Image 1 (cartoon, helix red, strand yellow):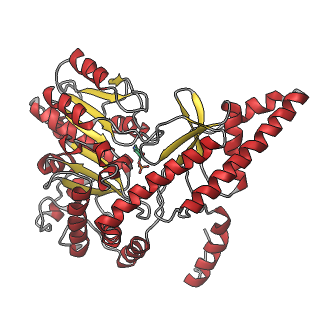
Image 2 (image 1 turned 180 degrees about the vertical axis):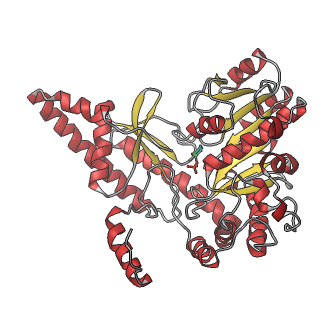
Image 3 (image 1 turned 180 degrees about the horizontal axis):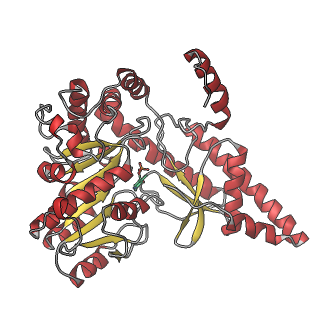
Length: 442
Ligand SMILES: *Cc1c(COP(=O)(O)O)cnc(C)c1O
């Protein structure tokens, strides 16, 4: 911490010089790691405005324009994502926060129905809430359960089908096994395979059991926006709460996520708080801050509004379909080149394997070093894979072809090296390379 002030221009020069070598081209068209969208021009500019305007988007009295943007963008979002009119939406930081809000809504509702005020009395001594989720749920569901005091040991796991969606017959068996309030975590977009749960069947079962269904649709919920993929999330409107990301497939700058709830009163009851100095300062009901974990907060609605306005309904549909088509193109190019494609590419995720875990881990390393494109690895059902997610609005067929060629080139190099090493009996090195692979993040 320097003692003396520095002129702002100089500060920025220093920052640029210091940061440049540590930046990753995540907005570029050949970044296929995690599930990272790029940033649409209007959304990026609107986000810069949000920074400059520096609104405190707590309610419509202190930030009327920010509130209007969230209201309009929220209605548009619900519409394009296939949710029913009148759902409430909180603009949050991402999928993790949105899952937490959705599960908090479930906690409030299920316990209120059982005559328990969880906001006042907490979970100690509360009626037990069953929590049911697929074995292939996203890890943030577990984190949300921890934060909300459910813990993770209460989870009753349900088997996954071939492509990683929830097994409906097993869901029914698990639901029938117990009684009482039940929260069921469903998924649109398995983070490895892109598979979407059969939401119509699953939500129907949950309703029969008087439960609450929450859909983690961080990226998969966008399937609803294109007629070509909408069938994957058929029945999505039957759930009770939903989590979705803006910074993934909508191509809004970080950070941006949405927590939807079918019952605005439950949503507000689960998230709002009152403070004497805030009383009467809100003009809408519920206020923006009543639907999210944050109190003071950034005006995220501007960038979301701008992205949706820039794309339009048709542009959004084309964005989703294009990414899906490009993911399939990727998969066939790699399969033609001798790779094993493990998943049914229903959305924008491709899982690829070269020979065995060791070789696959080395191909990932080689691709990252090569620099033509970027992708990470994952472990799915015990095997190591390259994991490709196509989520950027600016990715072209040429980008995919060039990246697939680079991956196959890297794989050939690894194969040759492994062949040579086997000849020289230095296979241990290969095993270490795989064993040291870092754990995968979403
Ligand atoms: C990315 C992702 C999350 C977490 O979202 P963040 O925006 O990283 O907080 C949750 N669920 C799924 C299925 C995801 O793909």
